[in-house]
Image (tube, rainbow, N blue to C red):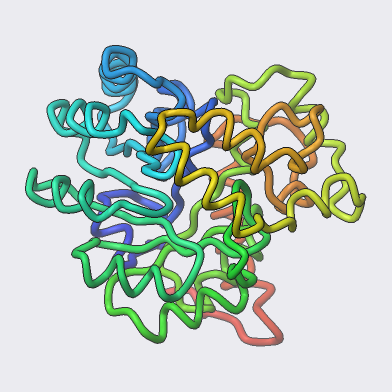
Length: 314
């Protein structure tokens, strides 16, 4: 099958699959592996922290693949974002994703530079704002996803079709997606691509230590120590503390406080979602993407969904 959506055409990728930002572990080897496998890999500015290190990592990724990859910028987390943004622009990274609040200034600069701007949000209101501000595509994350969450966030199953119904730009779904059925489910909801974070945390190219990966392989999403932490939303004062910290450049302390009830320490990262339920072994990025796409094609052409099948072309 040929997986052609507005997202694959916009980003120049084979499959409508993006790697999540994965703060702290979004490095060149992982990004390049995802891109080479037909998805869109992502280097995370928050991981590198300085313009010099980000530039080096972008060049490293480019040396590892000739496929498109992206850089993630999170305005709510990084007070030194402008300098990192300019590095990504100078290096002509074709796609830049912003996440969280206060992104319009960065989005306008990205568009001015002639690059593709994707904005990641958690509510319909902010998806509409991103479209109005000129984003080329919007990624909507549901409650099942990872990281610091708005008190207003809804589930992926509800959020995606609500956004699809009201915006004209392509929609990318995120939150709890990690196998062929959740991939197809997101597309059935109207998304034209998916973003996977947790699923890529246990691939061989991910820089997480092996014992962290094994913790994720063995994680049970029904276990309260995982489920409760993943589904927790932030209090309004935590969000405000984080915003104040951006202004005062003490963002690390505020983020730590806001996520103090977060993922169990053995996970090794805050980038964990309910997609842990789909992780059963450590594979390469290519093996993961091939498995999701291959099983999705099998479902559509052989097993079908609720008795409906897609007849293969003759």
